Image (cartoon, rainbow, N blue to C red; front, side):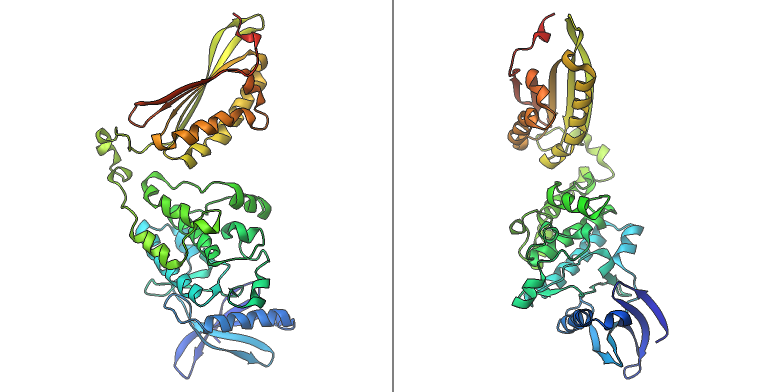
Length: 400
C-alpha cells in the first residue's frame, strides 16, 4: 500500500499495487475497532459479496475479498476521475447530467434485476473513471430484496437524508423505486447545483421529502421537469418501474424549446399563444377602498403568474404570510381581497379550488368576513374565468 485515499464511517481506503496483474487497485479495509464487532464485519463482507456478484460497466468491480490477520478487506478498481459531488460543485452542463443519469439508471436497472437495492444513491457514492464514465460505488448498506432476511433489514431509516425517499424516511419496506427517487434527487442536483430540498436538521429534511412539492427547475431546463417529477413522486407506484424505463423516458423527452434558451428575447413576439411559457411572479399591493367610522378601509390586491400548478403552490408561503401581516396591521379595516392569476387553462380548476380553500387554512379564517374576487387569465391574455366569493357573514365595515 502506498497512500491512503480516503476514510469513511466504517473503513479506510488505500492505494496499492496488485503485483499479479501489475495494476493499481483501491483496497477498502474495515476499521480495526469495528472489525471486532461481528455485525460490522458481516455488513462489510456483505457489501463485498454484493458488489463481487454484480458485473456491470457502471458498478465498481471488485477484484478480491477476504480477511487477513483480523483485517477485513476488499480490493476494487482504482478510480481516478473524482466523484460527482466535486463535479456538481464545479458546474455541469445538461448534456453531461443526462449522460450520467443514463449510466446510473443502467446500473440500477442491472442491480434491480439481480434483486439489489442500493439505499444510498448520492453524489459522494458516484465516481468517474479517467475516460469520464460513471461508477456507482459503496454498496455497504445495500439489501437483497429477494431474500426474506434482508427484507427485515429494510425497515430501518438508513441512508443520507438529503437523498432518501419518503418511504425510506418512514422506515418502510423499500423497493427498486426507492433508489430511483434518490436518483431523481441526484439528477436535480446535477442540473441545478444544489439538492432539491434544504433543511436545518434531519427531521426537517424528512418533512421536506414527505410534504414539499417537487421543486421546479430553472425555466431553461423546464423540459426535464416531467422526468424529475416522475422520479421524485411521493408515491413509489408513480415512479418509473425500472432504470430501463428512466432511460426510455429520457429518450422520449421533448427537446428544450427555443424560447427556454439564452436567446429567449429574440422569440418574444411568438410567445403570446395559449401554450406560451410563463415566468413566475408574485406582486402584492394594498389599496384604499372607502371610509367607515373605523377609518380608512383597505383592499389587498394579489397578482400572480405560474407556469404550472407546483409553481403556483410555491407562491403560497409568501402570500399567506403577507395576508396574515396585512390583517394584523389593519384588523377590521380590511375590506376585500382581489386576486388576478395568470396561468394556463388546464390548471385553472385546481387553482380555483386551492384559492377557494384559503379561508380554511390555519390563521386565515378572517378571510371568511371579506369578499374575494378572483380573475383567472390565460398566458395569451384571454380571460378564463371570473368569480366572486361573498363574505360568509355580515360585515359592517362595508358601510361608507
